[in-house]
Length: 155
Image 1: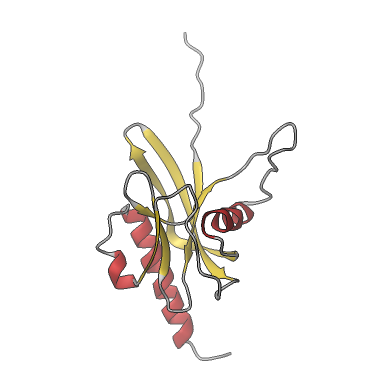
Image 2 (image 1 turned 30 degrees about the horizontal axis):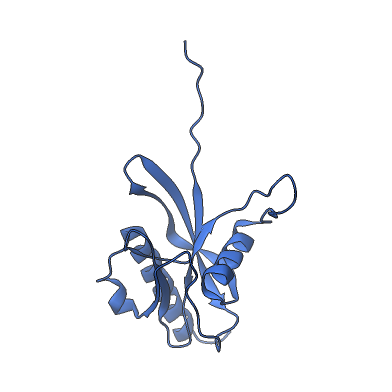
């Protein structure tokens, strides 16, 4: 009988980051899809050259900094923002999406060598973009939360 090997799921942490004009930051990848900034958690290397991430939020903050030059703070998990994506047949990724706050709003974001293009989009523009539906749902949920929090009276 063959030995059972438990499957491993790659995990990707992603962030919905809005600028001062309430546009979401998106990056175009090698598949010509728009995606949220983020990436995989670093487990660290035995020689210490690669440092392990302390948490998913720390990994996301690092990835946003590396991919865009923005300093951001990862906030809460977005409702409905945990989903499974199959970017290529047979390869599934668990995506975990956080809402984020920009800590350097005056800094213009830049695209890194990891992506082809950076764009800033309004909520209405996102619906027509080529991107996975899971990202669109997470972006819409974060916009709803942002609008609700702006309309709530101060406590």
